Image (tube, rainbow, N blue to C red; front, side):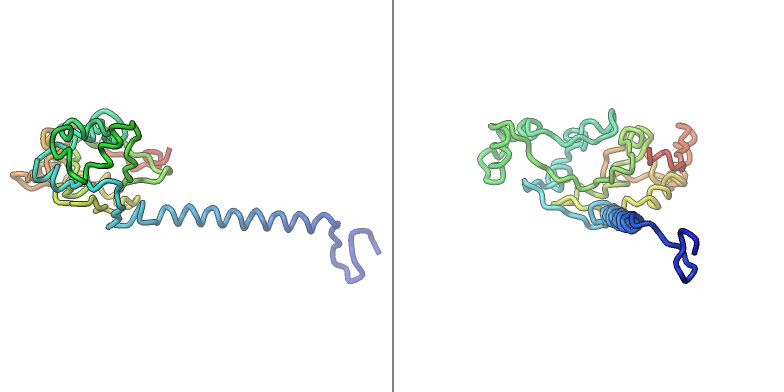
Length: 223
């Protein structure tokens, strides 16, 4: 009988081979769990589901501030025209008004405490893309995409709710045909603006004037 075979003619594996099989199986299982977790996160309400509406640490009404009072989005989210990220306002921004307005209201307790202690309010991000996707607010805002296109009518929301799926297909649909989302630059943050002509006609003109050609390459969003 030759070395490396058993009486039945099959191969004989060395003793350490069983350990290799077990370790390989463990790595395969860990990989399955890891990628399963990534998929679960990517498909969670936090990233995809319309209707995601997290509870915030402070009861803040966009319907009152952006709607009734007509405050411009950029007063609080003041970096959307300059950086990739939309800033979450610090407590000092709130206190610009509330140092005198409703300063004794019970809804202001946490805001006043934050201002006094310097501890930031832990706002919960609603529109939160996964780390696997890159998004630049400035690139979209400065090309004519209005806040409403992605965030909906926040001026009518007591609690901000995700209105769009934020999925890859949804983004690609806009990149392939952005015309209906384009508007004059001075109307970017307007919630009630309506075009005086067909949105696609106006959008086509804006697209040509600004030479807007959104990329559909994988590397545009996955860097």
